[in-house]
Image (tube, rainbow, N blue to C red; front, side, top):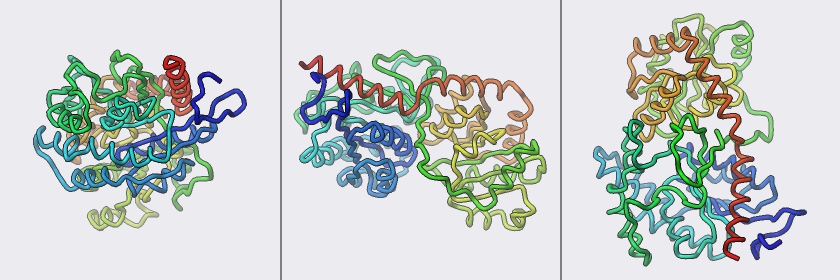
Length: 429
């Protein structure tokens, strides 16, 4: 086929493309890409995935070939051990420390023995963009797993530090451009597309959640969730959850995501606020069960007599359809998955992009934003009660469910990538 790359193999009438994926180290970024990688492999494509060393199991579970970051891992170590308090500090840990040059170095190491048709990157894609400009990869796409940040957002301008940096390039270009100069590239200006691919950007959400912001070459696919290849390992108390759902009891999920995970900020206040209400069953996925029980002491009784169920992990696809509400620190993935299940939200988070994600929940009327990452017991209790008693929140969550489910998921993401690669091949002749 004329649209096939020299190294692509044909599977029937469809070309088999070669993909190189690269992700930020946080698990909340890796999980959506895992769904895309899994779908690409199932469609017969070859996939190599450059990721942080501690994500190897997730990469290999998708069917992709794992390559570990080296230089980028050093920049990640700096980020993990630093807590900036100013915008300038955030710029340095996210974009400085040679991150762009490190990305290029790690990607070039993979490119020495692998020639992809497409490089797909999620957040902070400056290294991938540089390699495309240098002609070292033929096609470059981005995957949005945090809110879509565009300049000139007006009334919907971000309030988080991350959102400010991603939408106002005056903060980041003084750090990015010197690294581009090292690579022999011209400096970017504030008019350039800095955070996304101008060829294809895939956003794991839907238009309503992103204020219908116009951006060329942007397509929505809804939440990206990997298919289960075997029956999930459910907690031993899972029958309690099924029984509660059957009896009409309200199930409240309480989660703190995969990045900011101090249980004293959200999990414990939420449990304290709700554990004495017999009409509720609280389901708490957290690796910090021991710390939670130690903190709550005698107030958290034996599992058989309390309304709290804790486990290191609970599969969202099993839990969310049973929930009457989800209490969350507002990670983009958790929020979009909950809304895709028609579950209204109580958001309590301010770190990373969470202020902006909560603003989107408020915008569509699908939940309450407490505006803090350390909510009080009384405010938490009132917020959950409001979400349960005001039918408007549920109705709006169901409206978002229908829109998110209509976006196409990982299958659509693959189709968009396949079409874009073939189109770019034709345009290049």
